[in-house]
Image (tube, rainbow, N blue to C red):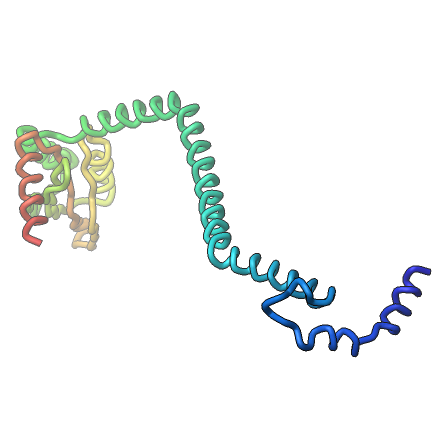
Length: 224
């Protein structure tokens, strides 16, 4: 019933009368305006205040609010991460201690400078002990790393397949780390084989060598 009356009210609305109300308005005396213009004016002023407030102040405050919300989210995540780290700190310490122990065990497998000659003699003896004939055993130039040095050794031996296999096994089982790279095998007369390889052994640098290496790297970095 009410909807029917409202529709009838819209049909009976005198648009001409509304238009007349907006004509001839005195801007200096809005208090004497008819009701419709005054309502329209108040609505326009309200909208202008809302838009102006948003443009001049509220939009900046809204952006600041969004920024603070993002910061809050990041701080909460950072707090969760730090809390997790704090909870797992004993486990991290245990893992670090285990890594240090393993690193120390590996470091002990690297000879120092004074032990290199005996290591080279051990490699040579491993071949002679298996009845191999050395045609080449030539240490190369050391290559310095952060805390250790690599020494390549060009090796060429001749012998039977079985003896060569035993030699490679003996080298792999040495208490010091020795790797065989660039391996090449060539058949010889009477069933023997020629074995070419680059044996690489490692030694750790002493404190003096480490300090010297760091100084050289610092100079190179400064030069760049």
